[in-house]
Image 1 (tube, rainbow, N blue to C red):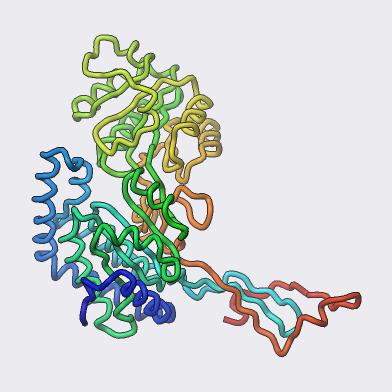
Image 2 (image 1 turned 60 degrees about the vertical axis):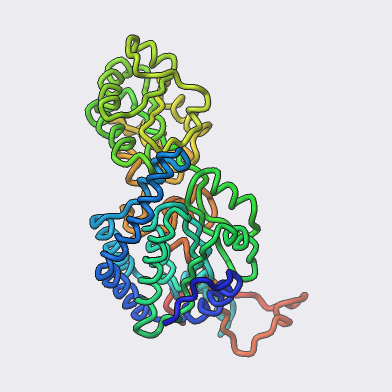
Length: 447
């Protein structure tokens, strides 16, 4: 096949639109075989992929030294054999998932021999814009392929070599066995392509941005195309007075330190005043030993008097996504105070409570207005792969269409199919109008 790298964005968008109509009718077997070919090809080409990634890492490392790029972005950019293994597993897991396309969601009889079916179908063309992480290219591509959606991909310039290598593998492997149209996946190349993409209403049905708060807000503010995503991940762990203290320390540590450069890492720890004196000294010491910068509220500063390593938190710290080894700590007066703080400063992404009190946990989980709420578990579990979705196109904090880690279900929509036998509306209108039966039918009644 011929890859159309270098082709203009409008031509690529047109090609994706045309291919989406063919891909929408691909069978489950054709899509799954293509996904397995992609997984095998990534494995076979890992040396070339890692070599391309090495070029990106070298350039990005110099930018970090010059202060032109954050270390968090550099960390997200890195690939190694372990990461390649995860990518391969993710693609294979998507192939194992049930095909969500063509499912009858509801079926009713409007009248005798007049039957209405609500059937799932692909959205069409997805525009995916992402920064730094090259594995996102494969995640989004595999989910789009499984759901029958064409995709336009625009990665950050810092991952250009990695993205080109992965795109070439995915595009070639997917189309080799037949049944999958060549133009279903497109790679955009320039910064100008982003602004151009935002205006392609005639070709793109949904935009999925993944990146910084500022980046996602820019996408949301500059396109009339529907956007699915989250602007930031300000995640909290609340340690309740009835918490198992050892468990709480482990969860707070994992939520911040295990991988701080991602959107589901905790940025603020809230501690009930009833347990703060017992909990905070050892927790803060553990953070400091791990190289975490601690920013503390006045009550925390008072409890840890003499700890010169910690600094006072500002109002801005409560609404900041660090994506780094920095944690803000605040003492609160019980679960109601914690809920109020989270709903005021949080981003609706992921928040957790540590407590042995089930009533308190239930209250927290009901009243915290976030897409994922955890009880006695790290915020780091908020992830499409860990949720059994195979992969994710992103995490949505919106309350329509899809919310939380978005997998296959966020890339399908539905249409209505009405089956009649010469029916017209006239008999159902007027003083002697015929009544509709509106009788539910088995979902497998027609399709």
